[in-house]
Length: 494
Image (cartoon, rainbow, N blue to C red; front, side, top):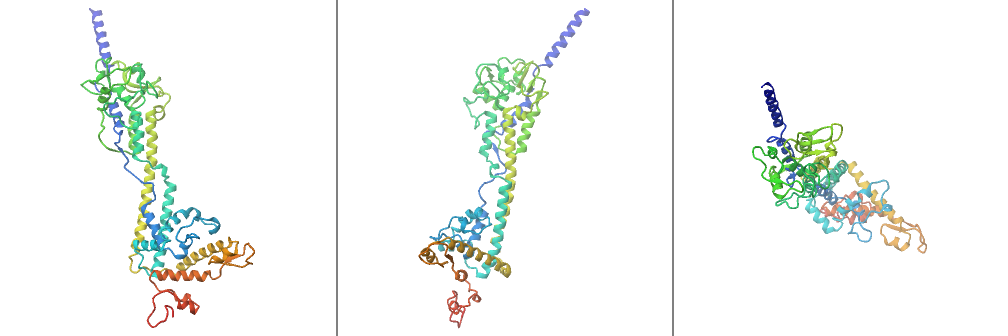
């Protein structure tokens, strides 16, 4: 009796132990939820909360256009083609001032200058920007303000280019493709009937134990969907509660024949365990959090790592063994999910890319806001009453600089000519050598300065203002000054 009682006690303990060492209902519920948080961002559901455009801000283009529209005649002449004054010229190093950054800025300047070199186009832009009624004095003051704002806006834009490289900015389509590759090994999310969906890399042969091993290529759990199948799908060898590991009191209805890919019914049931309908605003921090949850649930042993319910031996679906994925590259001694699990590595890399995108977008948004503010400031200044007069010293310095640049430009242009006929046909040049002898005899005409002054007066008259008569020292020139005649006078400056 005593021995029989001992035997019955040992049998009860053994039976209880076996019951405790079996897969139970919802054993993999937490693991399923972690994988479903990855599948939830698949398809086209992941959205970037911070979108950005790579092109130059519209406000900057508007400010540069305004700046060119009100530029002085001397400045615009620098951009005129030698043969066709209504066309913008290409940059020519030998004809431009030395030690400048003009070669880098010319393309932008040229594009805007081309809009105003034709008189009718110029007038249209004056009207567009509401500067066609400004007097010459108002124009000078306004020009100085806009020049400063345009320079600051360009600097803001260039700094943003350096700090936030345009190739750091991505788009939702690229992000969604990368996510779907990690989940499904395809660019898009599969839809019913799932006939072309192959989470195990086109598996053929083998069994659940060999298929449910993380890796790449054929007959391996290559992506997140394969992992979900391994920890949740029922098969004919499941016993007890193994088929309820992810579904609670009701066993999974569809059975996977683990000698090949799961059929459309199994895939439909597995994907039905996850939310594939909610739009998600995805950030780098959110993506890393989802991945870290999966990584934190991997059980490490001296021989391998296991995701899902692992009791002993293998991930073969048996109730006393495991409904899990085996990761041979992870052990108690080595391995990181960021490098050992291919689909997770893809998504960790994507999180790094998203972080760069977010930082770049922050920089661009700040730059765009600053540039838009400067353009608004320029537009508001136009309606200030009155537009302040420019500081005479500063304004004159800017005018003198433009005139000097123009003079140097024309001087270089003349000195490049080595034929008498060509030199004489250029109104800015004069020939100082014998006509029959070619050579460096073409020089800048000394009257070019007076011509530039006349151009400025014409420019002022075109803006609706009387010229500065103090510039005329010759009586004949004085009588020809453009502008509105004053009462009792024979000429504008008479």
